[in-house]
Image (cartoon, rainbow, N blue to C red; front, top):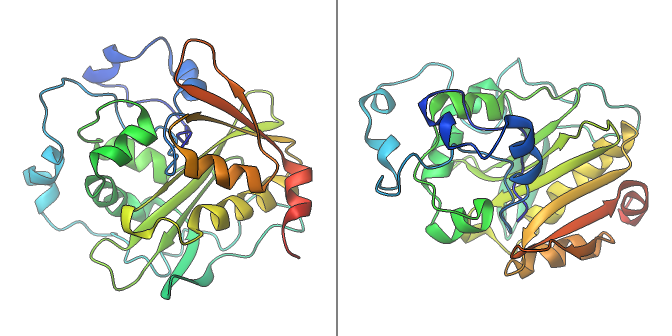
Length: 265
């Protein structure tokens, strides 16, 4: 799916792999991905030889970390409603069932850093390919902290959590405000065994309500052409596709106001 792209890679030694500057990556890579759009949730690979899951084996990851979220209610620093939203924005958290699995939808916050790392490490190669368009072995703790600590007053990052799962985070939907102040790049990622249950559709609906309450006009996403499931989700909300010359991706555009009217009241 189009990769959520709120932000570029962390500023450390791997920064030299950036294509140009962080703002360019923000607009070009948030879109790579697919049924699991994820906004640049990771660092570009430092080398092709690094095995996936290397971060899981690090000593730093093995010690207990205070503040780790359990998934259900997060902590007091996570607002119940996206800051900056006007009337019409959804009240979070929400409790829903997907395929019979009870889940909670809520805003991501700083306490979710380690859960996000575990979520990434659970991805298959296919998921990573659809999300980022290239091989990616791990993300750093610093980058994960940035991704869950976004400014929810202008951007939005929402997770779906299942309380009784080893890795409670099963899906993420987010948008990143673009420089024009009227449009945002969207991205989603859904765990492999939870696809086809309506999670991406539900997350997109919530993001649309938040965006509409803030006066945004357009959602955009860059999606690999092989990611047919994501195109189907966007089509339900009136999304239009435009081929991106010289790439294997299409640009999707969704009119926020028009899509908002398609949602049930």
